[in-house]
Structure formats: C-alpha cells, structure tokens
Image 1 (cartoon, rainbow, N blue to C red):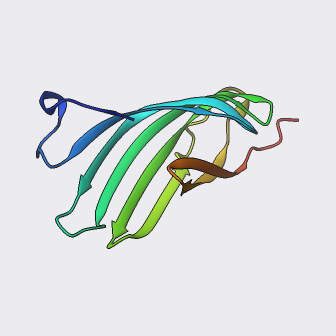
Image 2: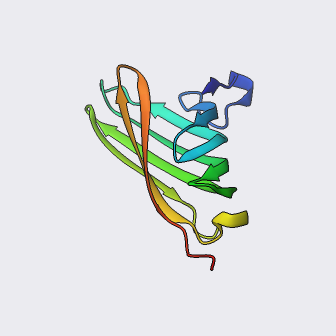
Length: 122
C-alpha cells in the first residue's frame, strides 16, 4: 500500500487514500492493484476501510482477472471484514467466479484464504 499525498485525498483530510499493489502466490498466482480509503477514529482501535482491487493472473491454473470488494471495520480492536468477488467481474477462464477472501495478519504478514467456485467450463 502506498499513501497518497494530501492533494490527492478526496474530501476530509482525516480520510487516508492508499494504492494497493500486491503479489499473490499459491493456488492464486496473480497481482492485485487497487485503491483503498481508510479512516482511524479518535477512539483507540476503531477504524474503517473500503477498497476495490483488480486481481490478474492464474487461479488454480485458470487465467483471467476479477475484482475484489473490501469492507472492514474495527470497533475497539474487534475486527469485522468482508472481501468478496464482485459479481460478474471475472474475465477469461475465470468467468462466473464467485468467492470470498479471508485475511489473517500474523507478525505483520498477511495470509490470504480464498474460498471460491469457478463454473465447470466443459
């Protein structure tokens, strides 16, 4: 994630804007690029973010792209997160892809668990 300058922020200066730039490996061998808006509340441990991320590469050997929609909140350090494939956003061999992405952070490192379904192309 890359912070955007104050001139690039939209609206309130308390809302931070970040560029997403990821590399996935494993069953999902792809790159992810997108935009995130985030805000930390005055109460310690409370925050929220939204993001849209285009993922391009191979998923279990099938090539194409799809878009993930992120929505996360923290209420006094209690997280709630939803990351889902935007319906009908998949291209190539991934057309019809549905799924959700779980994110676990351990020692500052992100681990992604992707539960998905791709319709049988045959």
